Length: 413
Image (cartoon, rainbow, N blue to C red; front, side):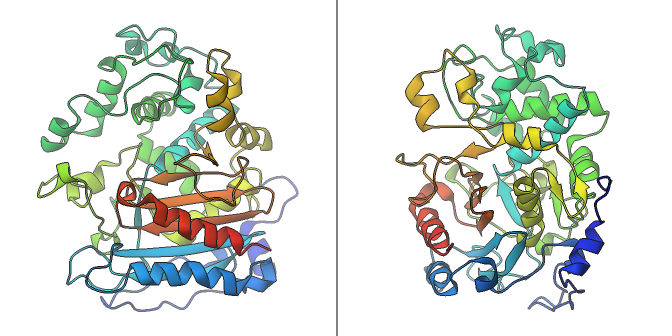
């Protein structure tokens, strides 16, 4: 899968001085994330890639403060910052779960990425666009005929990518389905047949998860693979992302970071830390990944769809995914198009609004957040990116993530 005339991933990283990682034991006695550095971004000192180490330490100090002590608001977290194809080695803080007796966070920890899952699914769909199998300008019903229920015939595939479809965030019986340990197929069928639009497609912006479920359904129908299998074979395996998966099947549960859960999940057998949810592989929020693994995907996007000789997307696709597509919908109010930009799957930063990722990041910065306390952003102007992965409910204190993000952004010089 190497591009014509390009060296292989191994050749590039060997040239950058990458070497095999020595496995490091963690407090549980298990070895660190098994991937070798030749399959990852090479490490660098902050100054060598234009990052002020003293300023970056502000972010580390904040995370350390918020993850230390019996009343720590964040059980555990990790910070990874990269620029120009290299990364500052990730820092890990706190514990593996919110329990008082939880062990220290493992160095091979895999975080529940929550809604950061969504742009990965859309990335897979864009690969089908490039192969001539999917058109964003087509009605969804061309690919999922039963989607016509409840008057959704005019909804285009592109509306699903931009949160302008009018679909609800979750199914009406979402909680009951989880209580019943429903399979993923039941959720996907419900997203197509049972959802009634809240508004006409293309007239408003409303963030929701069921659009991603429908896109996952489309991918499965066109590829003949499950969505988890498709992402693994088409994205994770080619990029050498051995510690990433949609759902946790095949990974040790001891590596999975346990997260704080919302009230409706408390004391249930379907919460985000349950074996049921961890293995369901919800395409709107069930991705698990390690910091260094996901950094590869960040660099792929900043590299125009190519990383170390492996090309998954054409530069044209990356441009469309990471620039404001809301201007494509003439019936969308102008203030929304201007101040709350969305790409295809990736969100753009919204400065001046309560859901901004940072006061030092412009609207050209793209990324996503997750309800489990995760945030990723990429800046094509600085060629830098930031991964903030925690296990604290994002909705309880989104300002903490903004403080961390500001400190990271201020370290780019």
